[in-house]
Length: 566
Image (cartoon, rainbow, N blue to C red; front, top):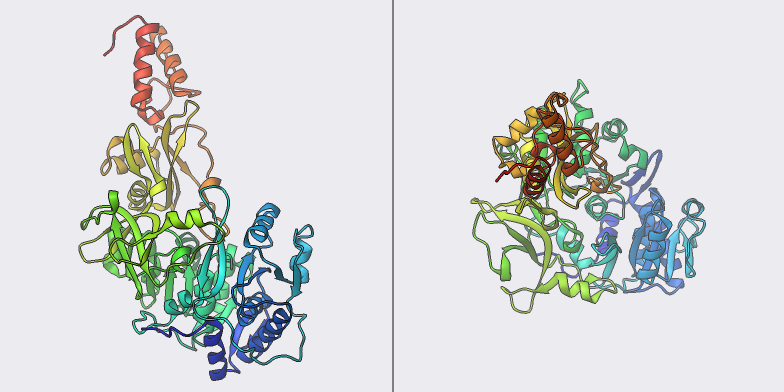
């Protein structure tokens, strides 16, 4: 059960009545109480209504991190409209596409954001937050209903064009308020708005704070990117609820472990956005044993979060990405070919049904029909095909296995890169790891592992570590050590920014050919492998060789050396 007739801004207004004088939002040395935030949002809402904004009308918001950004989103909701967040740092082409595709006729911005986007192609009505009519501060009459749009968030699409996911008030309300809530959020909590408001994790952060009477600390962009500054902010603001992508948290945790004291007030850390390596939480767990570590899986199309798992000693030791069980109002299915239910332990596509499902994709009925399909187990209902791989564990929890489109074929074998990553992370010295499939000049696929380590680890040691657990075709041809993994603006690993490996690392000491026969063989190897240098002790497969290249190699040796190898 949940308040089915409530709207996001209606719940906020109810909280304003309870705690009007409490601090609602903080940015640097600026702050607003609940009453002040409500009044400023109301001023904007009345202005927007005067310009024709109402239910099902889309309003773009272009704002840097600030108090005005929060005012802007609440003001649009109070006007009855739905907001489309746009980051001023986005490329001009993406900003233009979002404005064009969303069909927004209004743009809420401020002078600072406008200066950063001087060539903004927008012919509609511009409304400047903070410059609204001051005398109208009362709550506007509610016009939006729970089933109407609250926001549209654009995410990357496989076609190369972003797609706008349409979320209703009811989608959000049932996530934060139901009679089986696993969290005990309250007015004493201090939250960080760490993520970009273009990433739906921010929806959880913003409304989790403001609809429960907590304080929301808007994290400056440079602070969010700097673990040292972020640790300082957590201490100064006495933050109690912290939401992080795993990649961002690993760097934050490492910096916090350098502090001698244990003065953080964080009572709950909530992970989401990408696969978690539980073993990386060990040091935090030891320093802050009373902090609840919660792993949540979610996607924009199912309204932020889908599952919940509180991590204990068993989960941290296991090293698997245990994402737990579906949240109230949602159901999960693991399906194989032909939409057949998969048994426990067998991987399949994770599909989600229930009241968190988005309405669909804005102006994209074909993609909506492809991803939001009829639920074969519940007539008349829909389910969302996530494109993620998972499997049921014997205890009824789910294990996340990665993206289906991260499956690759190497030497004819289908491989889950996430499995290799998990094995690398089981090494005591490896802190972070990502495995990609790349193609060489001949178009042949090979595996490349990128890792961040606490100490120098020899490549042969890593190969030996993996060889004890994985077949040879799953051993990466390349190992690239990085000081840190590149992150996107949403705090996820930016796979496109990972460097192309310059040379395979075999771990063997180079020894040049010493005989005419060795010289001939080395030249053939270099040609077949596309390698600049091959030593007489190098391993063919460690240099990126595979079964197809091996056939080519044998053919060349037979022809050029006039021998007959099988």
